[in-house]
Length: 206
Image (cartoon, rainbow, N blue to C red):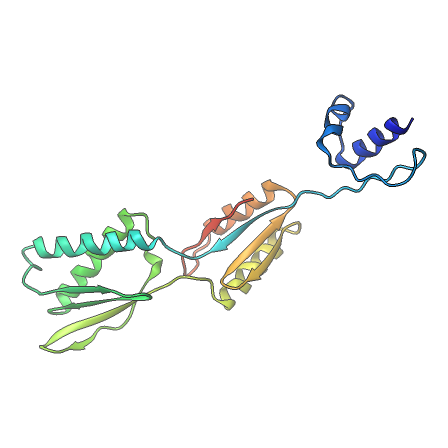
């Protein structure tokens, strides 16, 4: 009788069919309290989640900059411009002969980055400025992280569209949780169709 009560309680908790009740008793998911006449089963529903981030592979960026520099040195229209591309922690700086050369270098850098799987949204091209020797310099900020304003926008959109999904802002990322994996996949598909000012990645799916 005691075992039958355990099986019944376990089955109700996990909505199991008759054929699956006995084998699954061995999983150790039961918490039993009381005597043989009283069976209490505590169940916790599984919750799945993933993180929305905005980041990039820095090594791929290093490779893209290196390839761009090599092409610039080989191109007949750019090899004498004495172009420099300096990659810093949060930005890169292009110094070259003139605005025409700068435009070509922007195209080369963007092409090399795209071929290495980098989103062009990571580049925030600042206004060019004059440099010594009648040259031009342009700082390109490297965008990563989701700021508070965008995080709130993404969270609101998720809550308004998916009632069973819970977004939470955690620093520069948004964590999305749900009891159904299909709901999480639907969130990802929706966000991929949006045109946000930063590149988004979906990681730590668990």
